[in-house]
Amino acid sequence: MPASGVSAAAIAARLSSVGLPARVEEYAGYTAVQTEVPESLPAESWREVLEAVAEADRFGLLATSLNGRTLWAVVHKAVPSTGDVGGPSHQR
Image (cartoon, rainbow, N blue to C red; front, side, top):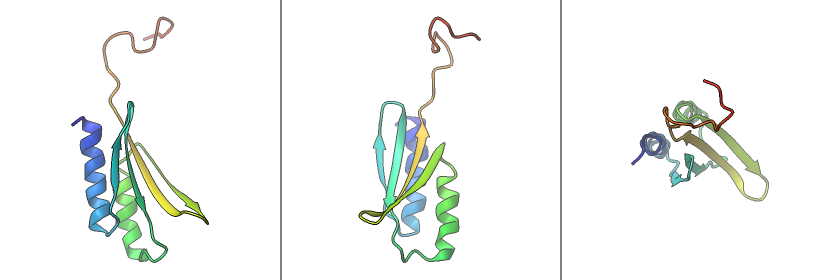
């Protein structure tokens, strides 16, 4: 499992420990974690939730009247440190 997957799994485990079962999905450039957040989540649980997703590269909360609230976090996969990663015009 890539390092991004390990980090995402750790975030998912912390969310699950607060009672928010999370899904982890691998994509080409990142690993994503998503969970549904109930309206009834106690205020004291939000501190642990925010500490968990703060470990990600990006996170957010999508709230709609139709689908409720979905918390998401993204951990980027490492970019190779050698080679021509920026293309021919990339300056180092």
